[in-house]
Amino acid sequence: MRTTVDIPDPVYRRLKTEAAQRGCSVKELVLRGVKAELEGGKPARKAQAVSLPIIDSKRPGWLRLTNREINEILFP
Image (cartoon, rainbow, N blue to C red; front, top):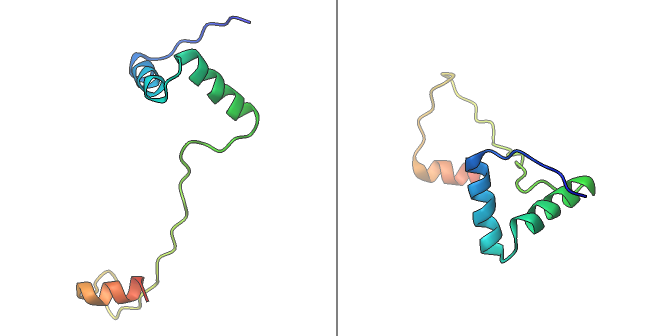
């Protein structure tokens, strides 16, 4: 089945570059993307939740810590 898809120039340039780096055609790369989307594949990049420690301060918005203290808090 043939179809026409309008792809903005900047996106197409990235697509063409990526296909060349992977050693495949633009058509093959587009088909892989469509199949992955239809099969419920994972997105290329997924944001991961980050859990940061809560640090009590007597003055909210102000906390004076050395780099060493920050490292000890983040990497116990």
